[in-house]
Length: 248
Length: 388
Image (cartoon, rainbow over all chains, first blue to last red):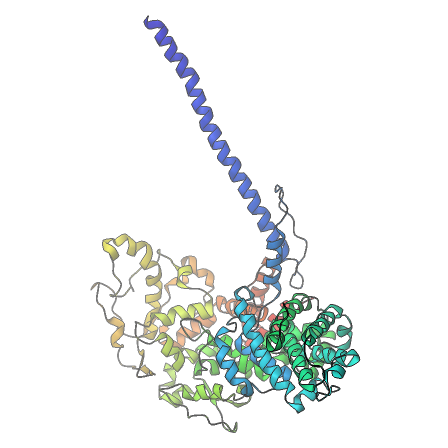
C-alpha cells in the first residue's frame, strides 16, 4: 500500500518540477523577448533621430549615418519632422521681433510702444523653437499688425516699401493685375530681403498672397481707397509675421 | 461662413502666415541667404540691403568670417541680442527680462573694444553711458541701477556711447579688491545679497565653466573647509552629510573664502578689507566646522574627477581677483565660452561629436590664438550654422 504512494510522489515530483522549471524559464524568456523588442524599437528611434540630426550637418560633417540593424519597424515620420525643425531653426525673442519689424518697416519702436508693452510678456523669451507656442504667434501677429498699420498710414515710409503704389487709388484699380503683383513683390523684397532671382522662385508664396487678397476683398467696397489701404495692411501683416522675419 | 470687416483682415492673414511660414524659410540657400542668417543670428535683426549685399560679396569671395565680424558692428547686437544674452548671466533665474545693468554694459563694452575676456573677471573695469547721446539719463550711482535703466529705456546706442571707467573710481574700493564683473553692482545684488556668498561661486562656475555643482560633486576630497553652518547629521543621519552634502561643500567652501570681505547691503556692494563679513560665519550648527578668518581660498577640485576641467597655475589666493584669474585660466573656460557662443549663434546646443570637437577647438583658439576675443569667437562660431 505504501509503495504505490511513494512511487506516485516521485512521479509527481519528476513531472511537476520540470514543468515548473519550464514555466519559470519560459517566463524569463518571455521577458527577454519583450525587452529585446523594446530595445530594438528604441534603437531604431535613436537611429532615426541621429539620421535626421545629420541631415542638416555643420560644414564638414558627413550626412552618411549607419543604420542600426535589427529593427523591423519603419521610422516614425512625425519624429523626423520635429527633429528637423529642432536642428534648423530658432525663433526670435521679444525684443528681437520688435527691433526686426522696426528695421523692416522703418517705423520707430517708440511709435508702437503701447502695443508692444501690452503684449511683450506673450512674445517668446528664448530663441529655442521648442518653447514656441501658439500664443506667441498670435502676439507676433498683433505686433506686425500695429507696425503695418503705422507703415501704411505713413506716406513717407510706405513710399519706400511700395514706391509704385498709389494708396489713394480705389481698390478696384490698385489691387488688381500688375499693381497687385507689384504690391506683393515689393513686400516680399523688402520684408524678406529677397532679391529678384529669389523672388522669381516664390510662386507658391505669391499665389498664397494673391488668394489672400482675393478673399480679403470679398464683400468689401472696392470703389474707395480705404479698402486699398486696409487690404494692404492685412497682406503686410501676413508677410511681416511670417517665418522669414520671425525665425533665426 | 464668411468673415467680415476687421475679423477678416486679421484672421485671414493668420492663416496665410502659417502657410507662408511652412514653405518659405528652409528652401533658401546661397551666399545671400547665408549672410541673412549670419546677421539675424548675431544681431537679432535682418541687415540693411547695403549690408546684406556687402556681406554676400564677402562670403562669395571666401571671407565669411569678415562678414560675421561686419554683422557684429551692427548696433542691434549691443542693444538687443547680445544684451539679452548677457543678461541671463546676471541673475539667479537666468532671465533676459531684466533691466540693463553694469554687468551687462561692461561685458558689451568689452566685446566692442575687444578687451581680452580673461580680464573680464579680474580687471578694474566698468562701462557706463557716456555723454552726447542727447537723452535724459540719470547719473551713475553706487546704490541704484537708474543710470543703466535709463540707457536702455531711452534706447541709447550702446555701441556708440558706452565709455570705459573703473569700479574703484566709482565706489572707492582698492583696485586689488575689484575683479571685473564679479564685483559689479548687479553681480553683487544677485549673488552677494543675504545668504553666505556661496551663490557667487556656484554661478561663476555655471556661467563661465558651464558646470553646476551637481556635476562637480566629489565626496573623496577632504572636508576640512566645510563651514559650521552645514549640518553634519541632517535628519539624524551623518551618512547623508558624508555621501551627499560634503560632495559639494568640501570643494565650494574651500573656495568660498574669496568672498569673505564682500556683501550687498543698502542696495550697494560692500567691501571690508580688515574683517570677514558677519554673515559668513553665522548659523553655528556644528562648532567643529571651519571658521572663515580671512579671504584666503584654495581649490581642492584640482585633483580627482574635477581635474578634467583643466585648471591653470592659479589654484589658491586671497580675494576675488585671483579667483577670477583661476576661472579664466581653466581650459573649461574657453570651451564654455565656445559652447555659450554656439548656443547663441546656432540657437541650439551641439548635436554631433564633430560639433563638440569644433567647440573644443574654438575654445582652444579663443584662449591661445585669439587673445580671449569673444567677438572673434562669436564670428567664428556662427560660420558653423550659417547654412549650406
